Every structure is written in structure tokens, then in C-alpha cells.
Length: 381
Ligand SMILES: Cc1cc2nc3c(=O)[nH]c(=O)nc-3n(C[C@H](O)[C@H](O)[C@H](O)COP(=O)(O)OP(=O)(O)OC[C@H]3O[C@@H](n4cnc5c(N)ncnc54)[C@H](O)[C@@H]3O)c2cc1C
Image 1 (spheres, helix red, strand yellow):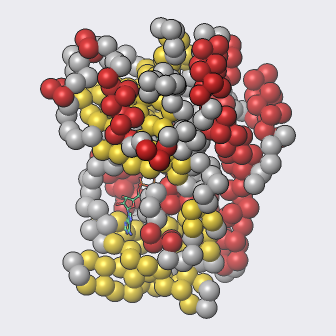
Image 2 (cartoon, rainbow, N blue to C red):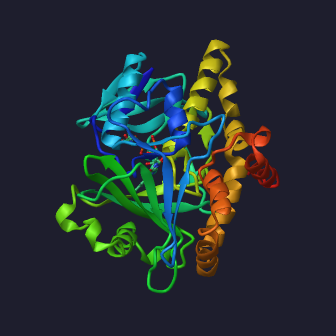
């Protein structure tokens, strides 16, 4: 297997660096032990609403998911995954850009790779496009963004502050732009040793989305934090960086013959919470399973099942997610949900499961059954 990346590792990636239990499960399946040094363990989600309301919720106890979240800089985390891939036998070329797919009679048969102005063509039985949110590579095989599906923007910055760290993800649902609550949230994730990942994101259902940048949303968020937390210019540990969040499988088609799109390249970010790491790993796993099967049986067409299987897995959930982002784009709905929802612990416990897509399915507890019931009413497309 050949793995190429245009960056040289370790490299920075603009991210909140947070893994929910879904992300933790994904890395455990890859053989990564969350107790390894370098990971910071997260036990609960702390949500800040309006009127000073704050609620702490531990992760749900589930059969299919661990009861912990994690934080680790993507600088370290992505390098760890890369080392694993190389150890498992992948040949890795770094600083090499995949400039376009090679298409032969409608089937992707390889890629053009470029480095320092030189280029070469490599042949491949299958190509996996995992080139992130812009995915120019897949675009050249006819893949387009589906404008009807949601998109988020977010910005983050590292800070080093003396504020004591607790094993919680802090999320702030009170981004106030002077006119109303914005459909998005701010976050503070602890990285240990005084380092924090601070960020904010916004959905494109926001009424003034075209006039706002991720940086502006970030400024709105940071300005409203208590001064004594020390999240200020003086304590900044790096520049403010931003990026897009392509959500709800917003790429079409998500595979073309011979090439499968995974992670952000396929637009597979959860519209409820902006989580993308778990979905990138899960879609990568599904693509890998199909490719292995297709090679073992010498039946390339097996990979044509990818789109159907992805829709079967996430279609209904993302469908509800799209409705959710549309609804909270209305400032009144956003205000009422935050005002009346956050103080209700039972409701919030359910919301945490739903929004982080943590469920044991129809055979699980009462909340799982309700979630299953709601999802079965949604469409898969
Ligand atoms: C501000 C922000 C905060 C976020 N916070 C979180 C969070 O806390 N938790 C979470 O789960 N998700 C978060 N996300 C989403 C998450 O970062 C992405 O969903 C996730 O990184 C997707 O992984 P990926 O492998 O598909 O793409 P990426 O992580 O973007 O990796 C793509 C790789 O492809 C390489 N590449 C690109 N083009 C080419 C090319 N042509 N040739 C060769 N290589 C190429 C890049 O160098 C890069 O290494 C956040 C996103 C943003 C923008």
C-alpha cells in the first residue's frame, strides 16, 4: 500500500484535538491504547448556556463505547497514526502531492504525484481520497460539494494559562453576536501542562453567514470569557488558524469507480457537534474492508457498495442532523433550546448521546430505544 501526503510529518492540523468516546473507540480498534502517554483523558462534558447556567454530564455508560474522551494535539496524534500505518507495512511518501487521479475508461487507475516540480504517474488497483476538506484531488474526477448539505467554519488557537485543568470538554452554547445567539459553539479543551485548545465554530445556517469569518466568531467567543481565565494575547501559544467543516456527507458522488472518498474529502463530519476524526477513521475502515474484499475475490465492483453502506450507516443520523442545523439557524429556536434545554439534566443526557452519536442501538437502554425510534423515522438520503 502506498500512502502519500503533501505535508512533511509531524505536521500541524487545524482542529480542536478532541476525541469523544466514538473517536476513542475508533483508535482502540486500530490498536492504540488511550492510556499511552501523551493523551489527556476526558470524563465529562461541561456545557455553558445562557443566564449563567452550567451543566456537567459524564459520558454515558454504553456497551459499544468506552466511557472516556481524549485530547491530544493533531501534531502528535496524526504522527502516531502515521507511524502505525508504516509499521503495518504502508510505504509512505511525504512532501508528495497527489495532483490528479488518472482515469482510464471511467475507472480511476492511479494518480499523478508531484514533488519539487517533478511529477510521475503511479498505478493503483484502488485509490482512496483522504485529502481533507478541500479535496481538489477528487474534484478532478467529477466529485462536487452538495450545496444543500451543511457546512461549518471554525477557528482555534492554543493558549498556555495558569487556570487549573479539569478532565472535561468545555462547550459554550452562548455565542452572542449582539443580535442573537449564533448557531455554533465555543470550546476549551485541556491538553495538560497548562496548554489549552480554544476554539469556536459556526454553521452556515447562520443568517449572516456570508459576512462572518471563523476568526470573527472566535473573537466573539474569546471576548466573552472571564478575564481571570487568562485566555488573552499574552498567553497565546501560536497563531489563530481556521478551517472548514464539511458536514453530513456533503460530497457527491462519494465514490467513483476505482476511487473512494473518506473523512473530510467525503464531507463526513457530524453536523451536530463538528466531530470528524471518528468519522474519518470509520469511513477509512469501511473503504479498506471493501478494497481488501474486492482484491481477495478479484471483484473490483465490490467497492461500488461503499456509498450504499455509508448511507446505511450514517444516512438517517445525518438527515436528522441537517434538520437540526436548519432549526438552530433560527435565532429564536436557538435561544429557546439553550434557555430551556440546558438546565434540564435528563434532556441534556439524551442530547449528549444523540449529538455525539453514542448509542447501543435498538437493543440498548431506554434512551437508545428512543434514539433508534427517532432515527427510523428519518430518510437515509
Ligand atoms: C477548527 C476545527 C476544529 C475541529 N475540531 C475537531 C475536534 O475537536 N474533534 C474532531 O473529531 N474533529 C474536529 N474537527 C474536524 C477534523 O479536524 C476533521 O474532520 C478531520 O481532521 C478529518 O480527517 P481527514 O483525514 O479526512 O482530513 P485531514 O485531517 O484534513 O487530513 C488530510 C491530509 O491530506 C493531506 N493532503 C491534502 N491534499 C493533498 C494532496 N493533494 N496530496 C497529498 N496529500 C494531501 C494533508 O496534508 C493532510 O495531511 C475540527 C475541524 C476544524 C477546522
